[in-house]
Image 1 (cartoon, rainbow, N blue to C red):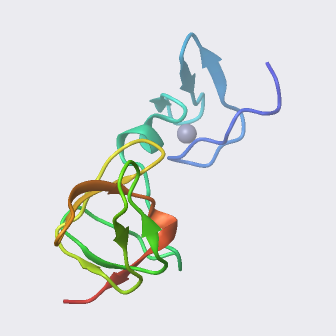
Image 2 (cartoon, helix red, strand yellow; image 1 turned 180 degrees about the horizontal axis):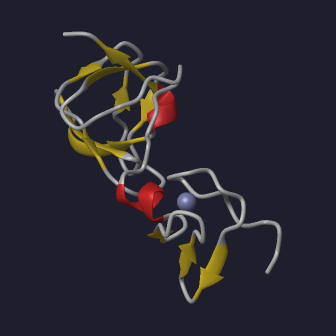
Amino acid sequence: MTDTLPPCPECASIYTYQVDALLTCPECGHEWQPGAVDEAAPEIRDSVGNLLQDGDSVTVIKDLKVKGSSLVVKVGTKVRGIRLVAGDHDIDCKIPGIGQMGLKSQFVKKVAE
Ligand SMILES: [Zn+2]
């Protein structure tokens, strides 16, 4: 047993212990998988820290070269209906005049429709 285990998310008890892949709380009996919540719902935030969701609209905050072409996504380009994906380029979207491509969330800013 180490003192690095996280406290119980249900009752905040610090006396949690690990059983195989699960953490167990002896005080309320809660069992959970460490990190499971983060994997199920990764939080992807834009350049200023807004939480992004599927279907959001964003604008591009700097000129971005499109890999493998001479095209550039200009700063200020509005992109509708983004889809969040796992990976280095965490936004999948269709950009007018360019097509389907991946963007990095740090180079966009959420816009209100
Ligand atoms: Zn507990």
